[in-house]
Image: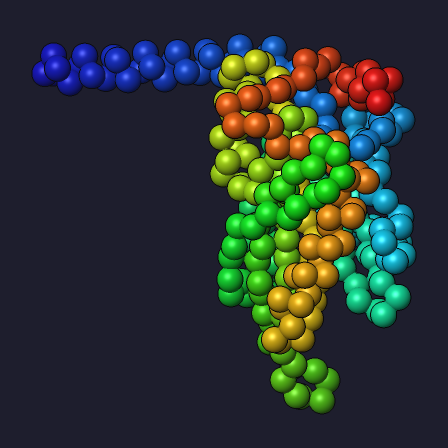
Length: 261
């Protein structure tokens, strides 16, 4: 065997072994970070109750349960909340949260939420929503405009549109990007040993084709009022990072967090 090939193979194996050792040590010492949303422990579980507001502006709401297909596909320590909001004129939108525990597979690519239900994404944008309540900041969000075509019972073709806005939040972290969330999560875990408890927040409303911008403007106004009621984290100034120390028991950590609020 050529000695150069042998040496390259030995180096590669050594790097793989070293990386595996680092990942093993990180996982064995891993701690779970605090949520970036208002939440309280659920007795007898490792999940939390996410506290979405019942009333926002002139919207009333009702809690919506996840389907068995959804809950059965999520890790056991996943926390979630979903509420349907309706304004006085009948305009409706859905606000939902999926929060990971120690299993990072709780959160998937947002595209799956729409395409798995028959929607086609026709436009993708990265935007920001100004929030005036203290400390006052611009919430980074991703906006998907989607469409669907279906056939009703009479055989007529039905067309519709939808506006889907989402972002990700953890303690001291807010981002609109799925890949950016993964990058930050990996860096924080390797650097501090703390696994940030990321949550995926989404808002969805349907509309008639051509009314997408009007729908987004109403959604933006709703979120500007709603987000300060349930989100405790906000974007840190560039170059600053904060990851709270945490107990390995998420219930203990949440208890400590609630005592300070």
